[in-house]
Amino acid sequence: MSGNTYVGCKVRYKRNRVMLNDKEIKRLIALGGKIKHNLSCDINGDGLPCRSDRLSAVKLMRKYIDIHDVKEKK
Image (cartoon, rainbow, N blue to C red):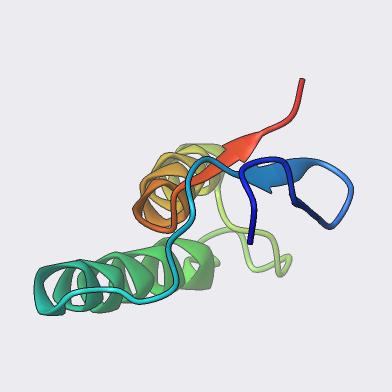
């Protein structure tokens, strides 16, 4: 993929890279578990995680995306 290849409509790859190393894979697994945990909170019983857990999940998702060298297109 070239540096200007667009994925979806809002993101693009920062550099040409196809594979993840072992450290990145372990980090993705850890982040994925934390993201799922944050989104599974249903303390209010309405099916929507509480605000602090949602915001925490978003921060973790940004780290998850950064590992893939994906940058949001402004």
